[in-house]
Image 1 (cartoon, rainbow, N blue to C red):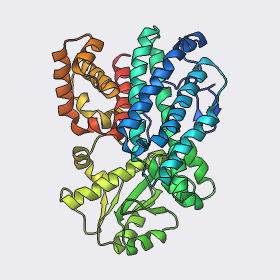
Image 2: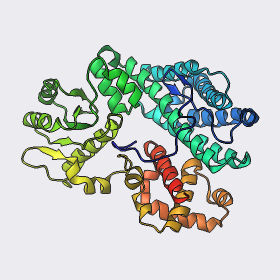
Image 3: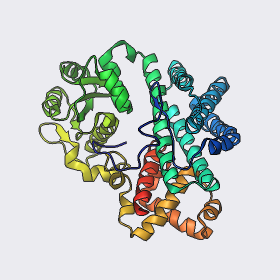
Image 4: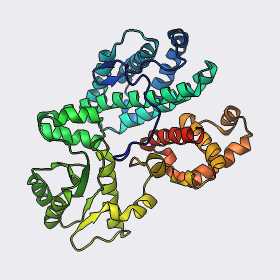
Length: 407
């Protein structure tokens, strides 16, 4: 979700002693959470699973097939059980959860679906889990530090589960056959650092910072990209894309430009786990060139870094790891008191999509106050608020912002 610098945040739950099952790093001890408290929560777990499953099956077209309902139920039930078990100190069944999520990824690939359905389902699960967290923490009388730890652990856990489904999807569509193709697919899908390190070992040493270059896919540009043996090359949504060491990519982009009748866009350097965002910036740069917002130089190579202002105006702000600055820039212009109430309202709306009266009751304010705040938030962020891919990043940035406001 971001660039080569990590935004400061709370330590993950039990970071030094949490168990690991496969690729899943499970939460360990969290302040104020005893096994007794977690066991008391268990009766509520089934209702959470049902809400998530029902919404996914009814709202995500890719999962509307009744034949998938049982698989979705099983995967969500097992993943929630595993998370609760880990917090309660019970034995883990992580391999079962990983198997189920990988099964979903394979099923989607075999049905000819892309990753959009899984991303939409991930967004729904995030909404419901965040809403549950907001309800449970005050009811159980848990301290704010526990709330922050749980939020961090939940985001990390969900991301790792999604990584497993995405990896299985990629394997089915044939990317498993060639190590470099597997690695570039993982980079551009936003796989975790741990998975990237494993994939890179046999075929391509991961540099500390990578950049992405993209141009129109033609026979000439595909052939030119294949000549760049020090880069990872692929075709991606009608674009030729290369991923390379950020310090070495410019001559490679120039090589592509000499073979292309279209401009070549080059992102700025990011951590390998953020190559997905670098690709997004490069593709948006190409779109702005096509629209006439950005002029391509005679060389044909357009550096995204030279056009950050135009990119920020045109795109949803959620890419590099100046997490709060990039994602929540409009809120930073507000006074701290306004930033506090607007961020609180925005976070609650992203978590619940609740009505103004329901949110007003939760926030302890009048309905009209909530409506006024939501209008201001909508004016600041526009359609970004409705995009499933952005909601998780916005929520994470809001958690970071609110933590800094209340230190």
